[in-house]
Length: 303
Ligand SMILES: NC(=O)c1ccc[n+]([C@@H]2O[C@H](COP(=O)([O-])OP(=O)(O)OC[C@H]3O[C@@H](n4cnc5c(N)ncnc54)[C@H](OP(=O)(O)O)[C@@H]3O)[C@@H](O)[C@H]2O)c1
Image 1 (tube, helix red, strand yellow):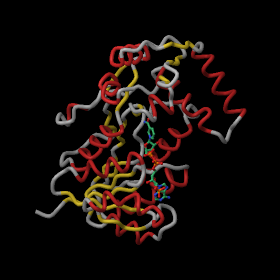
Image 2 (cartoon, rainbow, N blue to C red; image 1 turned 180 degrees about the vertical axis):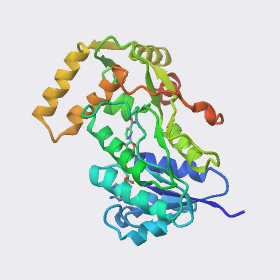
Image 3 (spheres, rainbow, N blue to C red; image 1 turned 60 degrees about the vertical axis):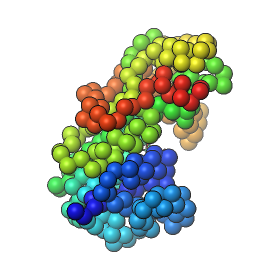
């Protein structure tokens, strides 16, 4: 039996490296990567494990490079990060190459809360991904486009970092509103495993594939942290949801180019108000994956 070819773009990134490794853990698979020439050393581990590399760049390379990437592939996975030139135009170019090569499935770089339910303007990065989804609906031909949605990343870098729900150093948790809304959290590694399963699945996969390692409110996260670590957190209640709107508007106006100042709060808002809550979780489709909960993560990482 010939090996199934899975093409991956973004393999040198944080999530992409994990997706690449999760694909290589599957049997009878050939992983093929698009890597920028200056980034090739970051793909060394995947190459050592047998991944093929096509050197090139989204947006810069001739179409021939993307045709070589997609030739004979079953699935194309994107874990790209960037602005509209990457997420909309770049992924559209990649999707067209996949379609023209007869690729069966395309997984765009979404990996987020339910961006289809988030209202325009609430989170600019979700706006880009919804715009790409519209382009994909129009241009996909016979390609099955599957949006993998995982909520927020349940990791040091996101739940305990970028979004800063709990600041471990300060032993403080931060919330607006009542903190009772359930939110979806999945580790990078579990998201990568589910993505690899979707990539090799022989059955049709729904257009939106949602999974979560934990569905838990702010209050639940605080209790999970406290019981797993044995330490009591200080909880800072920063105001109402309207106060959060005002804070985001103020920060964005003060520093429009510094998205680190306001983008994390936009994600947190759409989780705290339930706007980005995932519907119809499909963890059960791949029961071999036992995704990590907040409590298990805190215990394992000794946070
Ligand atoms: N749900 C959440 O909590 C959450 C949190 C973080 C991220 N995410 C999402 O996860 C996805 C991946 O994010 P990440 O943090 O893993 O990203 P990342 O570490 O910044 O990696 C981005 C990847 O894209 C590649 N890339 C960018 N522009 C390219 C181009 N023009 N041509 C070829 N390759 C290009 C980079 O290659 P180089 O190595 O050459 O630069 C790198 O491999 C994104 O959709 C992001 O929004 C979700």
